[in-house]
Length: 452
Image (tube, rainbow, N blue to C red; front, side, top):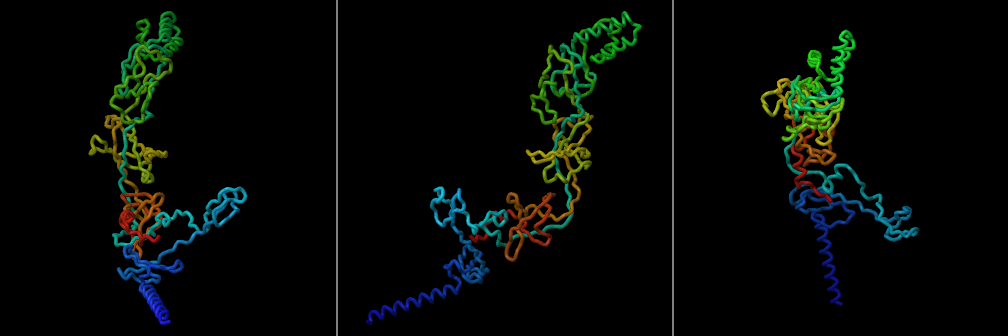
């Protein structure tokens, strides 16, 4: 009997010691074992690993304990993909069609969200630390916008030299693309049986019917329309001898861009070295038809300066706005001009719009293909501005880290145009908010508090 009494007393003593130890640990805040129904608090510093079922401060670092959010338990139900009215709490087969039941998303399961909190999971988008801050500024900003550009031909100044009559090219005096041509310069010699016939008719009229002035005038007008000049017709009347081959002259100054059968790049892009010696498609001995374009001449007295405007600066460049232009030949030599045209079509390749400026090029200061640099001073824009370094882009959204009590919390904002490294704030923060100077630094840091 004494043996059993001693054994019972030992068990009783150990039970009392165990209960007292559990109570003491729970009260001291170092208990790491809690039921799912209890509220748990932990230290923000992950290395401390301090947990408690009561609010308070960490006994290691003195920081205030924070509440640990518990995930809601998800209810597992199974249903048939063909008969959704069949609901079971365990896997199996559909009693109607025999198909395997599939798991169904319960109402308690978290739904997909596009909020910042969802994008930053599993962190709680709160950063603890001491960082330099800045504030948005309510002010007016203006800046100089640098626009890259290039000299291009003005398509409106091009001249097509077409054959006025069918015939055979006897001799070419211009043979290469981009060859310079002066007004009155001989281009090619043409032999035309049809023109030869009209010359014979003209000589016959002035010889045998010189008194019929109206018919002679009509015949002379026909020769003019066929491409002969007044001096050639006068020489024909004086010599009374046909000219089987006539010369065609250039009506204007210009650069040979090509012929009707050549693919031409009139946009003014930089040509390859061998393109400047590209032969024309029409050769001596070729037969050309009436109205066929023999030469395309581009006038370089007036050219375009075409500049690219980046997407963020589209609203800052307007018609008739002043622009200062320099070239890669001499960056100290500048030309002041106005914006003559703003293209409405957006280029999806380089994300830019284009503007055009008409340039006087009689002195040939702007060769085609010359790279330009345009400087446009934007108009002053009033608004709330924030340094771009403070803004973090996370795909389709932009956030900043706003200073709270003991850290910084991520907050979504909307921005507008950008000027000189500043972005215009549309909504999200005000001039009273303090935000981290370099938001990207916090995104890359390991200061996020993990709660899951």
